[in-house]
Length: 100
Image (cartoon, rainbow, N blue to C red; front, side, top):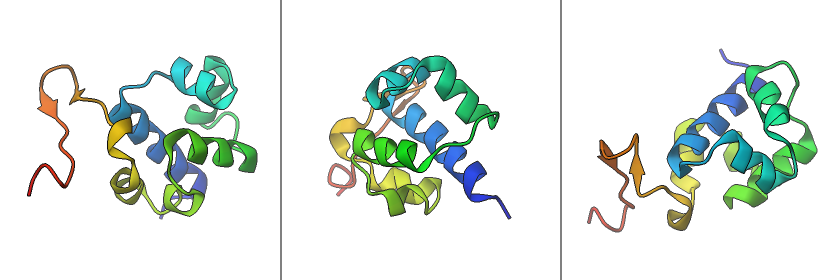
């Protein structure tokens, strides 16, 4: 079973990928430097409750949804925050409304 801290790191990594953001851009969005984001994502420094609030505001996802796992958090990510493509031109993200 993964720890909450590890689960949050995986969720943040997935959100970075889904939005096409870099650690530098995330850091600017939550008032942290890229080095601080890197240290949190590597597990060298834990994410704080204040960071969790900032992540929730940045991504537009309520705090509890950030802690419910990668798939759940990604399902709550607002459509306007999603990158048009993942991995360059390999995959296109569609919203549930577009697949109907």
